[in-house]
Length: 161
Length: 222
Ligand code: HEM
Ligand code: FES
Image (cartoon, rainbow over all chains, first blue to last red; front, side, top):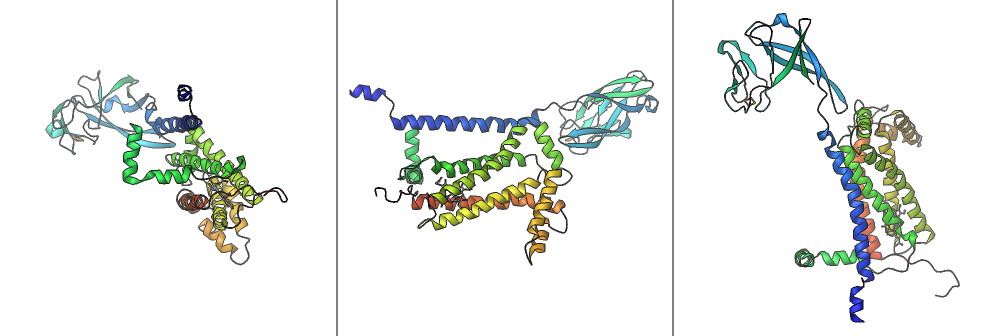
């Protein structure tokens, strides 16, 4: 008799378990969508890549980084903005082009080509890059980012977004 | 393990008497109509959670409100669900609070010693309506714009002070960025803070006075 009673779940415990389970389900029902909702923009793919026209290749002086500035439209959240993209283009032979972002690979300041010094200089923490974009000194962890390029009808394009 | 922790905590903060007062209090024999208040509370919590989530993307200015709402419904994962829960929850809230009030009326539960519970209830009803009115403007689409134009004009027909009320609600002559911003402020700060305070008092009184019994039929056995 006593043993039998022990095996059975008491009414009180049954209610506790049921209420706990229903509460847990409701919690999950809110919790999972809530987390998805909050992190979703962070997981979204970055902007689709597209060919961006920089300008005429004739503007590029051989062996000297030339700065191109273009305005692109980007969509962030529900806002469509105009943004300026600045790209240094280097060509040694007029056939192969290296297009480098002017964003420092350390913490994102804008780097500048200093002709007299033959180097790119980042004003924020003294990052120095050589003409090819390789790190010479300072904190930047990797060379300047490069864009894929193509030339069509003497116009230079980069792949970006 | 869990009981040991519960005891450890109880010894230090004394949560058990509070828990017992809330969940193990004496109850008369009641029926399902007595759950309407708890149902309202449940939906109120739903409104709070989904409302907080909506503010993560919503922007209360005329140039962004509509687009940010569209962004929530069409771009954000689960955004349609969160907004839908908040949208439909708002209507459910009004329905439940009215049903709850009708139960209180029909069972005479507002009588001594529960008059103050009733009065806090009246304020809660007004708050719920206030939530609906201010929230309706926030999507800033044609429907909400004109509904608020009309709604504030209704307030404007109050004798003597009507024009004042209308101007204070709109924050000026017409519906504008000022209107949207103050409706937002009321909807997410003023009303929730007041609601929480009053729900707290309301529930304290419900517990302190106990739940009323179902009235007996006249002539029935005592
Ligand atoms: C946000 C809105 C409200 C919430 C969350 C809420 C919650 C509750 C809860 C949980 C109870 C316990 C008993 C029951 O559920 O029936 C209760 C009782 C009560 N409510 Fe409300 N209530 C709200 C609005 C109102 C309104 C609008 C009125 C009337 C004007 C009102 C008047 C009362 C009274 C008089 C009692 C005591 C009933 C009794 O002891 O039998 N409440 N409320
Ligand atoms: S950001 Fe360029 S060196 Fe730190």
